[in-house]
Length: 476
Image 1 (cartoon, rainbow, N blue to C red):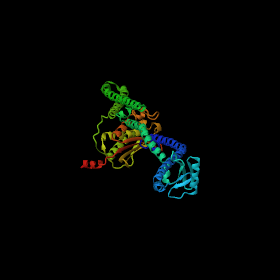
Image 2: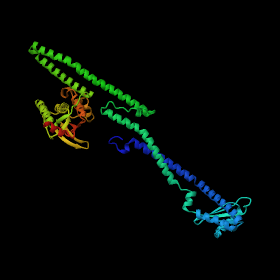
Image 3: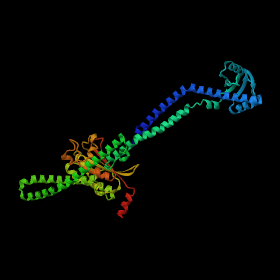
Image 4: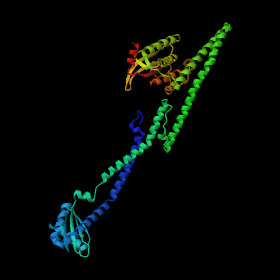
């Protein structure tokens, strides 16, 4: 399950519960129908079983009478009563011949009726069923055995089990196990795809689903294979783009250097009337040089070749210096930079990259804040579940950014129409450099529109637990 997603939105839970409910309902319906339709069959089997058992008991009793007299059969009847709580009476042509108990009038009537009809008769009475079974065989003609079969729980469970709840429970458990395996089989590759897609979106271009998914011989395997191909293509395109930026930056350095040399010679040779044009050429050359520097920095950061040698950074001092410099640059244009709330924060990282990240964000605010307004910079220490973090908040009073473009302004060369034009907004690389520099320090950079107008950019940077101690040792 992905982070922040309610359990009810999980594909695994939906598949599992849907299949389980469906199979349980189907299994329960079939069980109920089967048990309902088989009640008559169960009853017939019970009656047949009892009549056959009584017939066998009667044959044994007649044989014992012929061998040992009526008292010999009594022992058999007593044993049957002890084991199954069933009393039996033996009749010949309607007269009682054996049994340690005196038959009731109902037993006698049923014996006479069975003798007359020549077939088994069952009659329910209070608390029991009476079975009268004529004995069959050449020397058994005229004998009838009558049994009093009580409605005891043990006998009912033995002869006619009420197994509906148990059957439903078995259906519930077995269907649950099958549905769990099936739902996991279907949803597990999707979770692998989701994890790989998240890593790819976060900038890990090496993320692939691998043979775990692409090795499956079904549509999911084909999807995994296509995902890996897409990731390979994206990685190739981005590597090509980074290489192109790096190469262009490098190739532009030489003609720009020659242009500056030519510009110096032209100043010596030109008259006063050419000074204005030469000044314009020099300004454009400086802008081009600045753009090449930003492209080189961005290419280096995107390629991952920028090595970070961690060292303690007093973030409060760094932010104060950036605010002073930005305020000095903005005052001639009627824009100020003010330092608001500040706290002492020391973290580990690259001072050059952190300074570049903060500086780009502050200068971006100076570019767009309205004239005679101030850009406010705050430095705070925040405590969260993932530890202590340094938060730098930069707020300007400019036109803001459309909500749909808040994430896009962190991409290279992106400028919002009518608000981020070339004259005011620079090349559109500064925030991209800041975003990448902050990411290399495992931090986050996000932009939001302020409630009273303007843009708020926040930089969150993790603070190592021993950063303050390291700074103290360094100062000693």
